[in-house]
Length: 287
Image 1 (cartoon, rainbow, N blue to C red):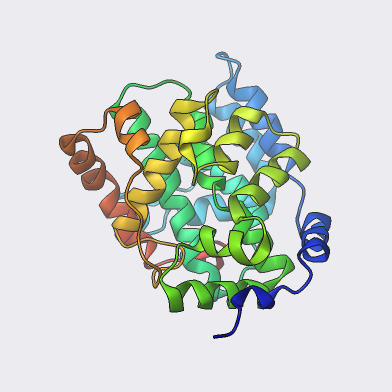
Image 2 (image 1 turned 180 degrees about the vertical axis):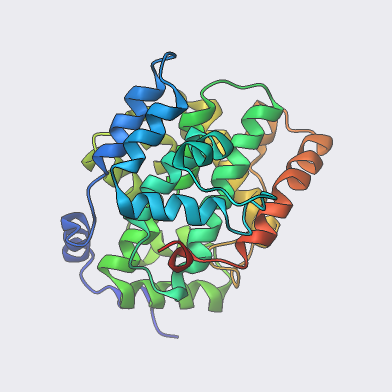
């Protein structure tokens, strides 16, 4: 039997290649500005709309998204402020990030885009179901939890496809196959990106260890929410790599969040319509 680890003969050189991140965009300044604005209780929705209105491309994407089947509002939304009111700041911040990070991905990567959005939605719903705080930051962390896969697709598409195929052939979770073949996994890459963007550790750490939720002692709730939302999304058929074996929600996540069966049923009921709508669109539909 061939040693599948030979896919990456020089792991140290490959790691340096990934860390250089030639194709990775910087975090948009508008995202940072929105974060500051959101912290001010006196900031109006009109003020957010005014900032978005300065960017014609983002305005077009926002109006296209809010009028898509994904949200299904009965009337046509024609103003940015109206869209912000209906979508909420979390969704708008998510759009700002995805318009920067996910642009340029081929249709092959659309399942990853849909999975990221669904985990973001599920993370938000878990916060609301359990009356937890920091909903906004948890939602953004859910959106970015697999950003490391985007890096692999952009920086090393051939190697990513080989690792993915090996994971499918052996029915091994993607992150475990990455660890075995590359020496690191997409979650760790995600944490590198957060450091590059100088995002706070309370975002970077949950992203970096969402496959090892038992390791977090500082951001326990957020890490466990992201891990649980990730497993739930995959279980509902919205995995980034649908051909690979599923993993259960980690025991530590079940215990710390006290997620009951009724909680999970309500969670699935709330995000299932969004998941179905996402099947009809991809990042290209928002251009």
